[in-house]
Amino acid sequence: KVTALKEGSTTITVTTTNGKEATCKVTVTKKPVPIESVSLNKTTLTLKTGVAETLVATINPSETTDDTTLTWKSSNEEVATVDSQGKVTALKAGSTTITVTTVNGKEATCEVTVLNATALEDAIDRAEAIDGSTYTVDSYSALQTVIVSGKVVLESATATQDDIDLATEAIVTAIDNLVEKASQDLLATLTAKLDECKAMESNYTSEEFAQLKAIIVEVEALLKTDPNNIAAADALAALEKLTEASDALYLSSALKELGITVEEAKKILNGDLSEYTEASVTALKNALQTAEDLINAGSKNIELIRQANEDLKSAIDNLKEITTDVNKSSLKSAIALGDCMMENIDKYRPATVEGFEELLQRAKDVNSSETATQDEINRITEELIIAILNARLDPSK
Image (cartoon, rainbow, N blue to C red; front, side):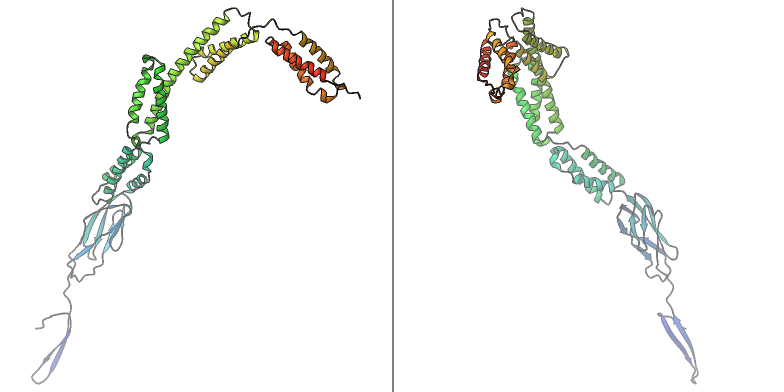
């Protein structure tokens, strides 16, 4: 009876009493141990796009005599692929089944879910690149909070696609909700306008100033808050409110002043104008017409209204009375002499008549002026006579 003990070869010899022999070569081989099953270290796996993880397969029994070569396969290679070593690489969001198969057909599977975290990663990168100094503290703090939450989701092994999508949306929303902070220049402008408006109160009745007063209270409350939490939009809106309300008061005052001046001008024009020069009366009528046109058109241009009032006042102040007692006889005689000289001006030495023509014209302008005073007449007469006396004939001509 031959009993196999271990792998190897041996020769069995049988010998008779008289020395005769017979042999048998015996080869002992290992008893076949087939593969009974194969298992994976994970039956479910969640990966984010671009991430890879290697599955570990275990063949049972471990002492199998079968070929231990394994075949790996992904049911959806668009979602994830698997190589010959069980390395699973996530490609895009979705689900796939990774199957490992032994040479004798035993199988094990792992359900793989791929999550798309690209949008979340991009949102975090975008958020972290934002300069918080240009935004209000509260809105920027809210963004920092969701960034932290987003990173937790990104690093979580149990996060679902819904978790990722919600975290992404929260960051994007926080970015959209960032509030631009009011600059120091804007706050300085707002403060200056506030001071200007407060200084106006003494110029108006309480009823007239009531609307602007209420706005002043609002703006003062705004400026008492932390400057780092004042939104640029709020500061601009406050500045606009102050400007509109103060301009309304300025406009009301300007129109009231213009109305008073208009009535004064009308009173003058409806009276006796015979004592005034035609030119000054015409200037007053023109200024009055301009003022009335602005009023009738409902103009809200404060500068135009103020200018019209100044122009109208100036026209009133510049009304000139007709002077009837001036004596122009000497001037007229001097002009006559000057005209005679001009007829033969080329017979005079140039140096002695330089500028004479211009002087003669000025004398004629004064002579024709209705508003020229006696002093003006006397001065130009004297100047013209001196020029005539200083003229010298050229002997060579």
